[in-house]
Figure 1 (cartoon, one colour):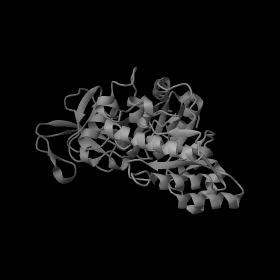
Figure 2 (cartoon, helix red, strand yellow):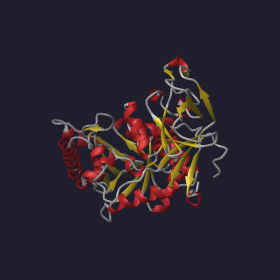
Figure 3 (cartoon, helix red, strand yellow):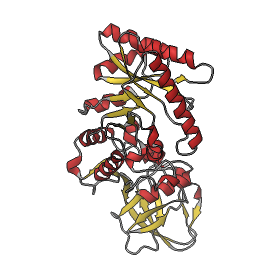
Figure 4 (tube, rainbow, N blue to C red):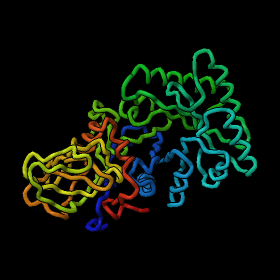
Length: 381
């Protein structure tokens, strides 16, 4: 795709995605399934193309946060099994059945609604039962003193007509932090699985491990893993970088194109609020990317972009559609030059300065920023 007419764009390197997929897959036992996270527009990378790429590479399942995300994948032609990890309103349950989407279920009452809708449609809905072992978000709460009662509730759910209880899963709350807490969650999960087996309930797919656990805790792989962040080349914590063998490669880079270069005298205030005043005669490049594109305003006067291989500081406040860089020390900068907004190191640095995590910034890259897939012949959607 020709980027010369684009003001700002995100380059998605499908070769890097393939490298990350194969690196992670090589860590798993042969029989362990691989579920790729495609929620939030595949962490900002473009769900349709990422879904097709993972399907081509051999992933076993994809996951989304809501049924509309599953619908986008199906409309693009993705045929892999899809797990919906979020709640689905009762009126949209028929859409789950139409799209052949597997639904997370976190309590018996929700299970009954799903069962009734499936029976009305004369269909069977696959479900994965969510167990809350310590995340305190969604799921049947597995807590001391109520284990038998909870196991009985899950068993009743699994026997409801119109449902196929294919999976049992939980989500670790601190796998990139506390090993003790993570193993305590895992022990609760194994205890719940055993209690259900005693009641004659066996699941085809039990899964716990998302990105941090995939890197650190092979004992949690079970029947399937759920890589998200690591699939896109990022680490849940800095100290995990050395734990994945050949290393992960960031899949996304965001670039913009210098719109204008202006010579301004010492003492000139720059941008809204005059938060920056030039301390010398300067050459200022106007770059058409701003918070309307998902670039955080909190990086004003703090972050850099790279022009002609040189880091250039942002001067003044980031605007909705543009920001200004000091390019005084970079000879020859002119309109049309490419400014690297995010690559691996720049995204990590921006996240630290913004007090957030790299995947928030990736997800925040606005839909008006076109995604350009490299190499183009790999983009199937």
